Length: 465
Image (cartoon, rainbow, N blue to C red):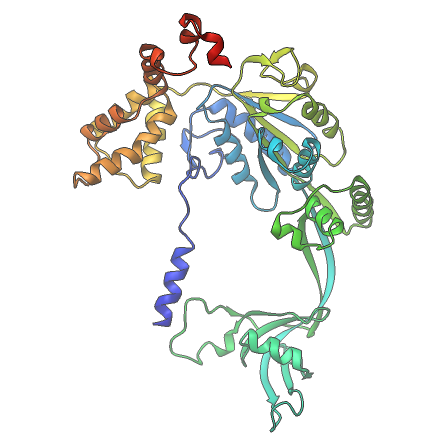
């Protein structure tokens, strides 16, 4: 019964929520940075993906920092998908943080502080330190328990060996408790951190592989360590500058990282941390990992934020900034001036601009195939053709939304595979933007506060009051 529960809980952790970009696994490039036709969930946008791949390679090589990239294109042309692909391709070692342009106006802190925290979250620090560890195979554990409970603390002896030597260690109450928690037994290979007393179970020794007839799949066999029992080992901790800021600025320390109540951090604290990190870099104890900050809907930022970004990008500890917008020539928020993409000209001059093109009908079909697979929906060929036509004539996002809706309609009529009638049904139930606008034009007089009624109506002023 226990085995069954374990396997069930392990399967549950694999379940992921299906999101708009959950099918993206990377940029879909080969080793020479050439885009594949369909790969890692990415379809089309060959030029944009290739350009993003070049940027990605420079980030990995540590050749650029403090640069900014603009992803510009029409709605539904895969700008966020390219940013997500970059994040997946970078891996877990490189910090990547996402922010929406409108998000910073609803936080309980100033706009520039929110942007500064986002910048600091995107800069990683790899801190190296040497620790002394005891590593060996457990030969025997002897624990002496007192005859009367509470009379004295437990004591014991631990015998560890390597291929070269064997030593007996006296154990205190805390170490006995730690060994019990880790369920350490003879034949296990363990590592003990001398500074903290933390015990890590590395696996079972190969010499004990025949002790039991059957073992669980989680049992890992390792070689008995060689050389001395006590060793010096280099440990690398990866943190972001923002995490160091929070730990050093709040009274509750690192707990603020979990509660999210970071508040505003004083500039003096950041200056001291920057100085300390610079010292560590000089001593070879730490290295800076410039990450990526992605700001979607960047046209929503105002002139103050743009001025701050201009200055922040000049800082020596600046991440790679990737921004995206779907606007054309529009007003810069906070001013009466117009500019391409709603971004001031001086900041635009700093940006490397990557443009995305509208998808062709063939590419829309491939994307819909990937989304059907992701959402676990089976569809007949003629239904897919109709959905592709709808996507080409309306929008790709609208066609993607119809996949799950048509699958639910199919299930309602006890069907297994989505047919044309299911697509037609949901197409009539849910309007796209064009049909919705047409409906509004026809019935605008029945709606409140529409321009036609204000112009035509005699009591226009009364409506405004």
